[in-house]
Length: 318
Image (cartoon, rainbow, N blue to C red; front, top):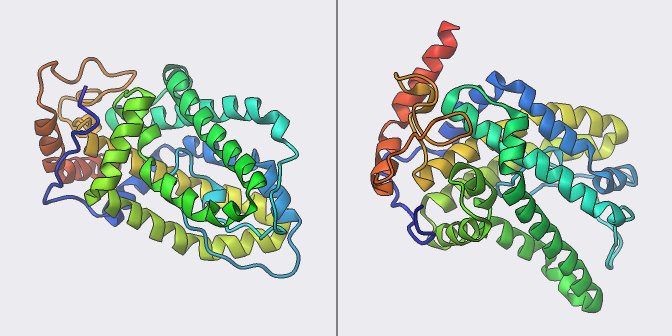
């Protein structure tokens, strides 16, 4: 397994975020049942729904988000401001259940997105089982950090002012972590370290994060106004409309992290057929044990355009 510090160099023909998103949208529409995951995630957010329903007057806002393990409606919504102070969720007692459910959804979604990229098909239940434990550790860690931040803010109210910049910083530094748990099968420690090293190194990691952030901002201008000002109708319609967009972002980030990690095989675009490249629960030993990770990344980058063209050709033939 590659060392966490071995971040690959930027290939000259690195694809832009727009190009990645275009291909990811095609993959999302071809695997639309997976959009039920972000839809369900959107509706299983009682605190966010409660804030929307409690909003008064007209509200407009812009959301700033870096790639997330499970983007959903709330990735595109700037929630109405709450009164000053520290607020404890009335559903805090359900946190253990929420962590388990979210871990299952994230493991199944990311595993299925990766398998669909590599083989053209997926088994959500099998992926949820295969990746559940490491994803559960990551999701629980994120929740612990969140609860700890709230507790710390309660003892030092001035720290509330640092909440937003700290959230953005941590989101940027470790956004690749859950994806590395799946596409590279890293441990949580290895994934955190590798994501951090890529983040401080900038390069394609920073460029992708910037493109993702701008895309979320553009969508949130309309989604925030629609959802917050229309209450229950806004939440229901917004959750359904944004689910395919969220799925496309998941596919885009999955492929990006796989390329950056040197894990991307020829996959469904390989003339040898599905399962010929990369790693996944269906594929069989797609990489040689003594293969050079650097060479894998170069070859994957060189074949990006060919793979995308083959993928589009197959869609047209169908």
